[in-house]
Length: 170
Image (tube, rainbow, N blue to C red; front, side, top):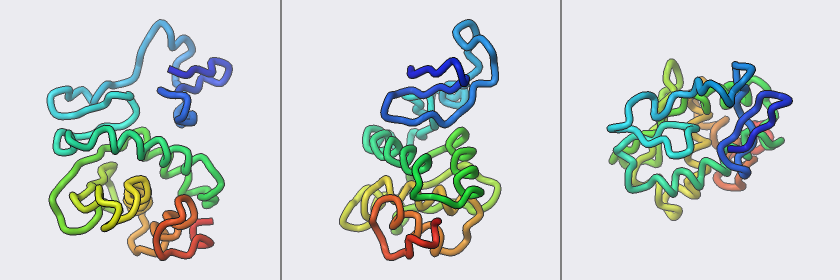
């Protein structure tokens, strides 16, 4: 675990930037984090950062690898929209990732949900592009962006993938 006690910031690995503030003063004596959303039978939470449901069990390492790049993107200048960046950071803390067999890359409810779905084709770079791009795209949708313009713009701005106008993510 990477610790910055002067600012009460914590991160699981050195590659992942600090995303969450710790709400307690002495984190070494009390762990307030929930592991696998208290459901260790159907949820994987190997890094303690987000929940990966059993439906994705064959893709955990791919998702973990992509999430490192998504975390870097969220904290970089590729997303300059302050409200969107704040929403993405809030989503990160509660994010649930599920997999399904739909024909498209992924989907997310734009309101009242912290769950994104990655479909089977979402793991195919030839069909949907890099997995990190699909995950960011669906996270942007979950931040109340109903059309494809903002998610595609952020994919292009952060990862250079897709047809979006990167200026629309700024």
